[in-house]
Amino acid sequence: MSSVRSRGAFIVIEGLDRSGKTTQVATLQTRLETEGIPVKLFKFPDRTTTIGQMIDSYLRSQSELDDHVIHLLFSANRWELAASIEQLLAAGTTVLCDRYAFSGVAFSTAKGLSLEWCRSPDISLPAPDVTLFLNITPEQARSRGGYGEERYEKEELQRKVRDVFQQISSEFTEATWVTIDAGREREDVAEDVWKIVYPLTGGLAIPLQRLWE
Ligand code: 2DT
Image (cartoon, rainbow, N blue to C red; front, top):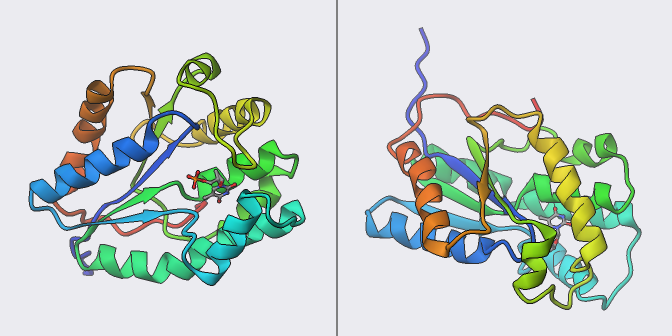
């Protein structure tokens, strides 16, 4: 009889622009650390690697790349950190990810690539135990001061991204994809995030799943 050793939980936080995702991820990380829970935060794209620097240059419109090429670079940027994520999980660390493969599919599909094609390079990456999706309406995003300067920070594209995220979410169960109304007060959103994440930090006895199985 084989038994599965307890491992850390893999938690992905996705969200629309202006949803307060960065703040929520930071709040969650601090709270976990305060509780003495071993935690490591990844952020995709990770702009520090060689591949990440190419992505950064593209996002800041300092270089042009074919849509397929940039999609594959985003995926490669996850693959180059996948082994570290797996090792941390196996060691019992809770892994938080600010954006992951779902952003990959959502943005590239919104630009016009096929959803099936977009999924394929991420097949068999570690799958999150839960994805928290911070949702705001385009109107709320606008009232929060509009979008920034980077290539994808445009209202029309953001609307399409929102639609693809919704399409992706329909394939998950309520336990593995949780949509959170991020149009509320910061503290209320943080409380909802905590209620979902905290119970997962005691160690999981189920094997790590793979995308998109
Ligand atoms: P930040 O503003 O969070 O740094 O994101 N993106 C992200 C993709 O198009 N594909 C991906 O695989 C990932 C992870 C979303 C930078 C932008 O990059 C987009 C916004």
